[in-house]
Image (cartoon, rainbow, N blue to C red; front, side):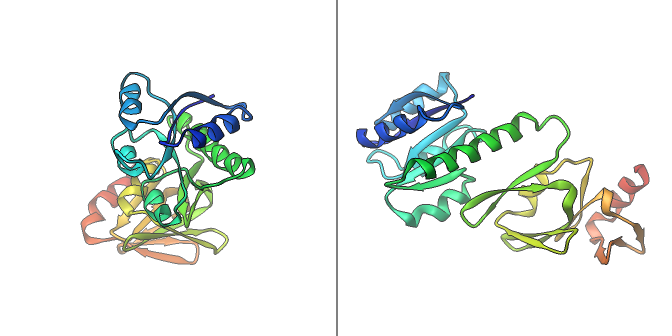
Length: 230
C-alpha cells in the first residue's frame, strides 16, 4: 500500500484526486491540504510515500515544496500549465498530470509510483532493474541488458546488448549512485561498464562484445584492482 497526501489550493482539485484514489486499491490518501505549511508540518511526524502536488500555489510553488521534503518521497505534480514539465522531471518526479486529467491518465501515473515503490522496497536485495527519466516518462531498464553507459554532458546514452540505446537526462554521478557497486564500475569520466560484459582488459583498454572502452588515467589503479578481485 502506498500512503499519500494531496496538496492543492483548490478544493475542487483535491476532490478529484480523492475520488480517483478511492478507485485504486494500492493508494491510501491519508490527508488533503489547501495550505502547504500545514502539509509540511504534517509530514514532519507523518511521512508518506507519495505527494500529489499542485505547482501554482500562493504561498509556495509545489516545486519548491518538494525540494524541502525527504528525497525518498515520490511526487506526482498536477497543474494547468505545461511549461513546468521539464523542471518537474529534473526533480525526478514520478509523473506530471496536466489539468484537467481523466482517471485513465491518473491511473497510469500511480501505477508508475507503484512500480517505483516496489523497486525501492527491493533495493537492498539483488538489483534487477533501474528506473530512469526519458523525456516525460520514467522508464524501467533491465540491468542485465546494459552493455555500457556513455556520458554526454548532462545526458547519458545507455547502450544495450541488442544494439539499441536510450538517451537519459542524468549525470554520471547520479546513475553511479543508483547502480549496484558489485556489478558496475566507472572506468572513465565518460564510461561505466558492467563486470559481466567484460571479455578482457589489456593495455588500459576494456574489451566488450564489439566495443572497446578506454580506461581513464584517473581510474586505472581502481579499475585494475577491481578486476584482480574479480
